[in-house]
Image (cartoon, rainbow, N blue to C red; front, side):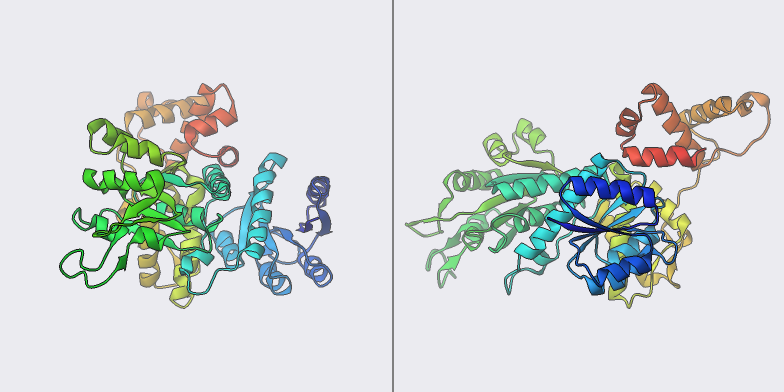
Length: 468
């Protein structure tokens, strides 16, 4: 039976959450202040802590460090009605496993609960072997969006099933290598090697030797037997990155290997058999390449046993601030923890940027900002021009329409017909108008409107509230 501690001054919410957790088989303690919660931690050792960020006597983020000192193995879930980057940053420093934005439903609670308990179970079950790659003990997929939560759940499910082949697709910088690492680290092969092959970096002539190895004397310079990457990955995972760049002749050799996981070393006469999980990744449209004849259809469908599609960052705005907090925390630590956050205006700029380079672009940008930041907060003025857009002198037609619609809704005379000179609408006004228009098209259905906008229902509620 999991032991759970709820620290929240909202007694009604704590009572409801406690009853629900008890119904789900938890043994629950409740505290209604930071001091009361820390005092309880001197007597009980919970598996899970639900912590409110705003407590009557102290900040929830100030409770994290002493709570961790008393109970380092407990998983922490932050609850807040006021999510913002500085809180997320402080929470990440305190090793928070997840977040819940108030008010939340039991349906929203379920995946958070499952992920927290799964994470705790995995931490107890997995002890990374000595000498293995460092990423295997510190793999995190940061994200608060419904898309990211669903992706993590799917990867965990696929990993637990012990799949033999998977294909990860997504734009450059979306985290395909991270997803492959998670697929390996959370599966039964976690204690075996994870071998990465950059398919775009291996020439056609060296492909067979690199992947399958060679025997002594196989060619000039082959002075001894050399094991290939496929053999080195025996029992573990072979990660074929950028598989869309692999020449057709190499694709045929790879397909033969995938069929029975046997191969001949170059110059060899005896078949070598391995047991390897194959994970491939690409930022290219393999289905279109199959139609064009530049990628083998039989190889494509052989890899398509478990397709994993990564969504670009612009399509999951709820992940932007948690990711920015994560990278700022890690990078700032490398530079003496001098920079501790962003100003509110900078946060807003990060949220409105399209991130064409996705998470990789964000990581590189934040490293540059941390190095050049003159103070302890990164301001909007330090962001590059493309992340600090200005409105054009005249709004485009669709924006003008939205603005006029909002003016009509508010009973204000249309500036276009009044002859008055008025300032253009702000980004917030345009965004709120767009949300209302989509909501109207969906006949007031907030779930459908959120899906059409590419945001979570929670984010939609929050933006509608801020527009009032």
